Structure formats: C-alpha cells, structure tokens
Amino acid sequence: MLYAWCRYCDDRIDGQEMGFGRENIGPAEARARLNELRQQTSAALRGEPVEHSAFQGLQRVARRYRIPERYPMELIDGFAMDVEGRRYQSLEDTLVYCYHVAGVVGVMMAYVMGVQEPAVLGRAADLGIAFQLTNISRDVMDDAGNGRVYLPLDWLAAANVPAAEVDYPKHRQTVYDVVERLLDVADRYYRSANEGVRALGFRAGWAVSTASGVYGDIGAVVRERGAAAWDQRAFVSTPRKMKWVMRGAGRALTAVSLDRRREAPPRSPDLWMKPDLC
View 1 (cartoon, rainbow, N blue to C red):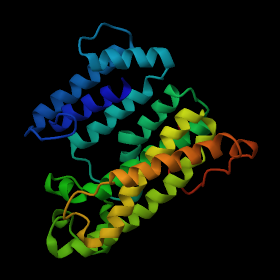
View 2 (spheres, rainbow, N blue to C red):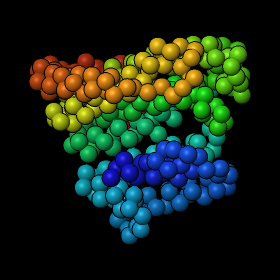
View 3 (cartoon, helix red, strand yellow):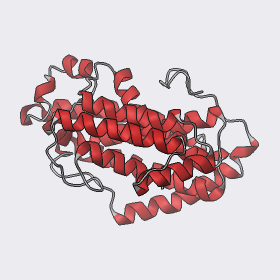
C-alpha cells in the first residue's frame, strides 16, 4: 500500500502509468497536480476521508505503523523539485534530491518493518539514496532528453560538458566518466546501508538485501557497458536476479545472527545525510 501511494504520486507528476509512457504535461498542470497530491496526502495523514485508493492505503499504513507526517510530505517535496525544474549544482544538491525522492521511502519502509531507531533510519535512507543514484546513472540520457539533469553540474562543468548537451553523442565517453564517479558514491551508500540489515528480522532483511544486490547490479551493468551503457536500457537478467536472491538470504542470515553479536561500525561522517534525520 505504501508503494502504491508512492507510485501513484510519481506517475501523476510525470504523466505516466506504472512508470511507463509519458503524457505531455505543461508547467501549470504539473503545479496543479502537485498541489492536489499535497492536499490529498495531508488529508489522508490527518485521518480525513479520501476517495482514491492510493491515499486510503497511505492513511491505513501511516496510522498502523505511526509514520510521522514529515516523511510522506518530504517525498512530495521531492516531486516539487522536478516540477520546479530544480538545478543540481553540487553533489550535495543531487544527494538532497535523492533523499527526498527515495531515501525517505527507505525511512518509511523501516517503520513498516518495525524499526524506528534513528541510527537505523539513517541506514535505510542510505539505501534509498543509493537506489536513486543508480537510477540517475541508468537513466541519464532519457532524463536529459526530458530536460532533467541530475548529475552535479560542477562535475559536468569540470569535464567541459554543458548541461544542455549531456545527451549529445560527442560527450558520451565524458558523461560516462562522470557517471562512474556517481556510481562510486552510490557504492559507498550501499555499503553503509548494509550495516542496517542487522536491525531487521530475517524475512525483511532478506528482502532488503536482495533488493540492494539487484539494484547495485544495475550499476555494475552500466560499468560493464562503459560509454555504450545507454545504447539500451540497463537491466539485471533473471539468472543474475536469482543469484542475488540466494546471496540476499545469506547476507540476511549473517546479519541477524553473527552481525548482531558485534556493534555496528559508525556511519561514515563524510556521507551526506539530512541533518535532522539521525
């Protein structure tokens, strides 16, 4: 139900259905849809009657797991960044976006999985941020074609790639070099997130570890292809996914048994995190 609400909101802003297709939406319509999402989400969280099943589901989940109102609203703030055409000058700017559109989803999922400790919420946000950095790396050309550039503009400037030319074939190798730097950052967030699995039960830990492995493998596919990474959409094959299902089980078993006997290493202080999260 939480995913259904996230998916519905994302689709409304992008003019898609289940992440596919793209309706041509003007700025005024996008702002109107954003306001609608904000109002309906706020009403659901206040316990008021809402008609759409996505908001009914959010209302039920938020009430049952006592998810603070700030987190669903922070996701809406992330959609607002796209509506406003926000520019991402630095890596930190990109990470702020990643937190709002994905990191906060990890935080809400932690609540659903029964964990509310601030330190663990930080690890959950790390995983969402890693996922979104992977998304950006995989979709950089499609995003650029739609007028959205999430790569840090100062990295592009240092590489002599104008933001308006990210999808130009002549810059393909240089853009890949920038993306490879971003994937290096994503890998650090994946490693940090993995330390939080020990706080979960085996079933939830298995799911999270598998998702982490599969998503991280998308980045590996991008690396394998190099400058040809965007000739076709990067995806993880079924055999590779099954490998991560098995590895995920092993990771989760280790996390909830052996890892619980030792103290989790401190989160690296140079990894960005929303200051008031943990």
